[in-house]
Image (tube, rainbow, N blue to C red; front, side, top):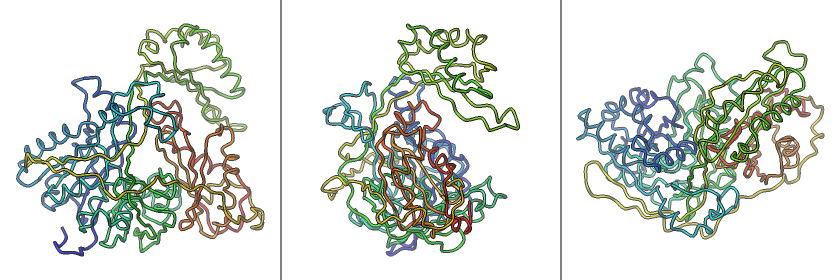
Length: 608
């Protein structure tokens, strides 16, 4: 670790997990390497596994596990090096049962004979079921739809809020080596690590804001080192495409931030990868967190050498007095059936199938379904050169509140007994129609809670109060059209090509909202990009997918990006969504494949 005096050298914080399905060997690989690392942080949570585990625990099923077991797989082989190198660990892995995870970690450490060398802490306070159930439900409003909890047609069974990082900071101050959280915000462990390392106070908002955005950049692990990157074809070394390096944030005492990655690993860290990740899952110029509000409208990135990028122009404001809480309810059961459609007359084939399906199900079965969704995915190539190029997916999704209505016993016969009389070449691709549960998710705002820190080496706990200096009123994300736009035909000769040949992009979800942003490969094209991407033009590009949803637009001039926020775009969020795009990622690639008249001079600068 660094010296005990201040200022210290920059803290080196590596994120080794961005989801519950990230690589299990990443923590041990990092800890066992020669890479100098002060902190290993990771996030094993999502709006997919939180509601699912919450509901499972609420049923009283003694076999249900409320934390993420994959964290234990990652931690155990890393323990010897964590002890030897005095690496601090902060993990978002407790999900809805952080105490259970704490007990497992303490037991694991004891098994390895390391109890006298590692102090473990867990943070309590994110489970707020009693707070939500005891509140006036008409006062709790969805941050996505504006609807009230009192009008929600589901019975809440669990509620969990997002915590900041100050409890983690206090746990480190108390000597903890490993800090476990259930649901702190994704970037909060990075804020906490930097605050403890540099001795920052709760009102050092500029420094905290820069650490927050550093955390946002690395919170999704390899998303900032080449994963999900639109420039992957030309800008990455394909000989190492199988081993993308995990990201490191170097955060100095004055809040200066450099993003890099593990030495010798694959992938890349560039201004473009940082821009894309910055634009992922944001809502506008204000990035809200329980410890600080980061103002990111003027953010910029500068390459400082191979795989080293410096972030600038982030400032801080006090945090809001509230935090987001996700309310979980049992939604019901769903089944999916896929059919291959081949060749001509796809819409007519779909129509024939649906008429026959509804007749086969009958009025009584149909009345018990809460959803019957039938969608064609894909299109047939013109004059296709292979059978595969002439085949698309017809996807059927059925939902019901009770299991019996979508059980195999109830549906197998009516779903298949007309196969001999339906459209030409009808072939199903999955007959195993086992129902799966889904949860409904209601995101709302509640006052920030008090948290408690518990330790493996003591029966005493530490109380951490919510911040006292907060925003006096709710911030409104600005939305505006381009000021002084240039005529899009004033840039000289054009070539009709897909927008994605000169545009990077990133999209993501927040509840049922979706955001998407675009920036040019070369900054010289910025005047054209901001003039081209009006809200009206964006809606035109969305075409049939746009059905009147509210859309907000703003610009990030420091990174030459236009950002759109699409309200309530994803139906009912991750778990209940009936589309393939449950995470809101598809829209960026959809728009990038749209053709437009692009100024030829920008294409001549280089494409992706």
